[in-house]
Amino acid sequence: MKLGDLVQIAIGVPDLAASAAFYETLGFEKLAEDELPWPWKQYSDGQNLFLLNQDGNQYIGLNYFSTNVAEKVKQLEGIGAEFLLKEEFDGRLHMAIFTDADGLMVGLINNDPTDMPVPAGQPLSHCGKFGEFALGVADFQKAAQFWQQLGFTSLYTGSEPYPYGIFSDGLMLLGLHQTDQFQGPCPTYFAVDMPQRIEQLEAQGLTIPGGILKAPGGETLFLFTGEI
Image 1 (cartoon, rainbow, N blue to C red):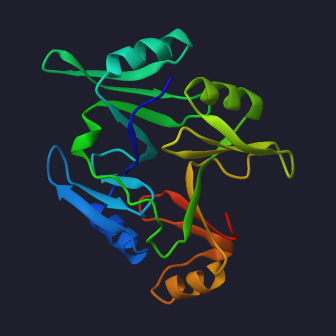
Image 2: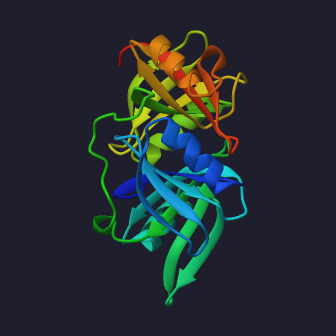
């Protein structure tokens, strides 16, 4: 199965203005904004959509969009997924939210993806190239099996310094890491000139010790030197 036809990274932030300024400093492009049903702004790094929500909650997860959410919910419940929320609008299921075993929140939203912007596909931020949405997991094999049931295929796996793998559903690159060094999820970027990029970002007032960048909303971004 596929979770949807378009995906965006959704981030609940306590101060929209501060988070917006942060992502704009990183070179993210603002695509849209509104005050309803709460203040929000949508950005892109060129490869992904990011939605900043000042909705009273603090989180980072994935939102998938399609026009057949009810069908997808039935499929997910058939493989044991448990839903935290199901919300109806005009008599039909509009949104459903579930989490995986490691706490990654995934929203399924009944909305025609053709009404939404699509990233150009090329990196445009100062962070470099998006490499993965990194998630620390308790059991790599269990996590990999779960996400493969949701349409993700393995691109690469390794065992050092711990079991890990990169998976894709054609829309999102998900990194599963069997480690307690971080929990995540953490948007992760790579560039061969990352030291110079970090130096330029720090000159604008950001602090990035060891390539770890903390956003005002609490989320963590990883900036690594390398080519992918």
